[in-house]
Amino acid sequence: MARLPDAFIDDLLARTDIVEIVGARVPLKRKGREYAAPCPFHDERTPSFYVSPTKQFYHCFGCGAHGTAISFLMNYDRLEFLDAVEELARRAGMEMPKDTRAGPQDNDLRDQYAALEAAARLFQRQLADSPRALSYLQGRGVDADTRARFGIGYAADGYSTLLDALGTDERRRKLLERTGMLSRNERGSVYDKFRDRIMFPIHDRRGRVIAFGGRVLDKDASPKYLNSPETPLFHKGRELYGLWQARQANQKLERLVVVEGYMDVVTLFQFGVTQAVATLGTSTTAEHAELLFRNAPDVYFCFDGDAAGRRAAWRAVESVLPRMKDGRQAFFLFLPEGEDPDTIVRKEGAAGFDARLAQATPLSQFFFEELGRDINRNTLDGRARLAERARPLLAQLPDGAFADLMRQELQRQTGVTATVAAAPPPAPARRVVPAQKRSLVRSAIALLLQQPSLGLQLERPYRFDTLRAAGVPLLLELLEVVHQRPEISTGALLEHFAGHEQGEALRKLAAQPLPGDEQSWAVELHDAIAQLERQTLQQRIDELQDKQRAQGLDETDKYELRMLLKVLAGRA
Ligand SMILES: [Zn+2]
Image (cartoon, protein in one colour):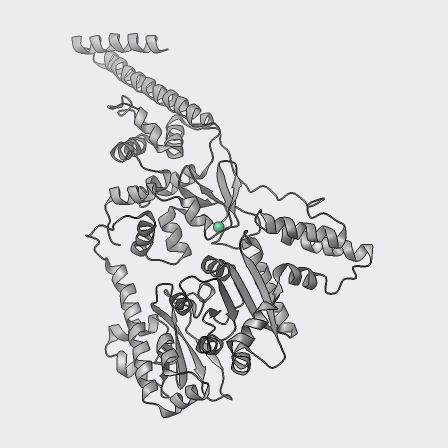
């Protein structure tokens, strides 16, 4: 991994608010000194994911995910270390240090991007050479400009076209396999995964090719769509086809339209609807929902009007509900039987498609319609059942005007309030360990982790540094780092000890909330250190007394012992 100066990272983290970074991606709710949310890294209903503004780090009590703003971006946005740092530096208006050498891992990822880029170029050349593929695209009204914008290509028929062109040695073949471009049969030989297909490169948020979707030309061939498998670069639940192009084409995205296929995205674009994106063969995930709203305040979901379409729409509802902060809106558009966005925009043009979007069903309406589909609202029973179904879902809404309106609507429709009788969410298992119950060293370490700057109040040299007790070297090391980097946050401190054998223990200790406040912590730390110093005195006294019994003391020893006993008595 590339090395950046510690001071730069400290400065960057000091100028970054982790709550802002996480809050832009995950719906955070204030809980005491911290913020909580359902964990974005594992599936859960009850929030056990906490972000601490004072410690500047996040921690999940469920799955153990944790880290600073940097590691959050790496894990959530799937950025490499340097990219995450660069992203934060850009936000903070900081210049990246010049000397950021790339390590072997960065090189491997860079090679993977390069291999996919080369594949995309190869497919584009093959498209130019294939009258059949070209006429297919022309037949669908995709012009050269749109082809270039989306980087559309063609994978020739044959089992080793790509392999022969780009897999020229063992290393390159391995690379192609890692990026999902090759398949392997039972006998272990590899061959092109995509054959005789129109190829749609899938771009990441920075415009790099990370995967492909391939569509058959012959409408009877199957599968109709074939996607790259999940790879280190490609996680389909996190990517949206066409988002890169939509962002390039629109200065500011006011809306995004979610459709089903690549061809829908491309045709809509061709006809002037430049804000369409497609999920990649999955239903809308929570990560998709977050990504959509991060890019545009209004999101329109297009689905088939049949039962399967409504089920898919409901899954989208479940994904967006926890993310419906004020200012965000979701709409649902159900298409007539046998139509898809591609056919509609061809017949009706962008204006016709826009007119349909304008008639789309708002989330609030679809929510109550769908929830009450098989319920008779004219009966008390029916209304009670509707309220019962709605409550747990409405509880997921972030606080705000939209949540209030939805609860009022529930009350209007059922006469039952959204919160009455709703069971309080079970409190997540958090152990609050009173500091004084821990060992002294442990307690001092816990306090330092709580607020590293407390360590600055302790004067060096530390008189407990010769104490033979578990954890003393670690405590000294922590204090050393704090003095060298006075601005350091808890998150950055943990980052420093990440590879340390005690790193994991430190992280767990840091995640536990301590009772009290800054003032009481300062007092506790001073008390703990004073007691450690006392123990150090006692340790030396014991040594001298042992020596006295064994061999007797010389004058210097005797003097030291007298002084120590005096000091100890004075301190008691
Ligand atoms: Zn978790």
